[in-house]
Image 1 (cartoon, rainbow, N blue to C red):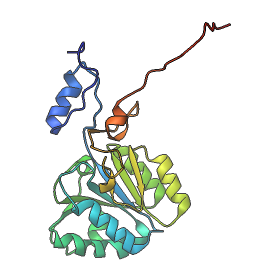
Image 2 (image 1 turned 180 degrees about the vertical axis):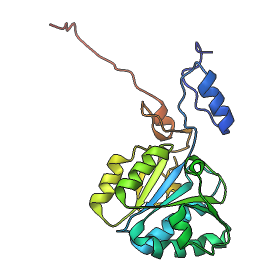
Image 3 (image 1 turned 90 degrees about the vertical axis):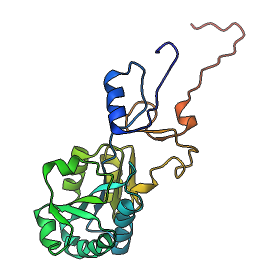
Length: 227
């Protein structure tokens, strides 16, 4: 119905959106996955890191702005991960860790080995992938490789690193010292959220009515002609 419909904002399950991407002839404002990351930097304030990483995963499991992968700088991993594990254990969150994080988390009752597929999986469940990284370079590289470009966050007190993260992470929402759960139309002051886009043309991120509409140019003249 391209003669009647200008744009579709699909709302529904992954299967529906995958089919529309494949078959629809009408342009769409959409996102497919919400593979969101939180990176805890070695310049992070511990309590902020715990608060953000816990809320980003456990506030709600079935939303597209829920954290699915936690990245932790190696220099602070031994301090941060055991404290986070205590919080996640109270919520029965399954952790799927790389070899280094599993050594630190040995004894955690719901601990499994992360496989390659985990880094690109949107669980929508109390399951979290955990990876220890050397620092900013590796964190940004991992995010830009596996992120769905929905929402990614850094926890750090280093202003320069925070600004670099905002520049170099190519996602619709990028955050400093805040939970990924804030990526929402109401939270952004956009009114009712009509959809979310991780595309780069026109609307990106949470989309409200103003973000969907466009203007027309009106020129009022008195006989002017272009020379």
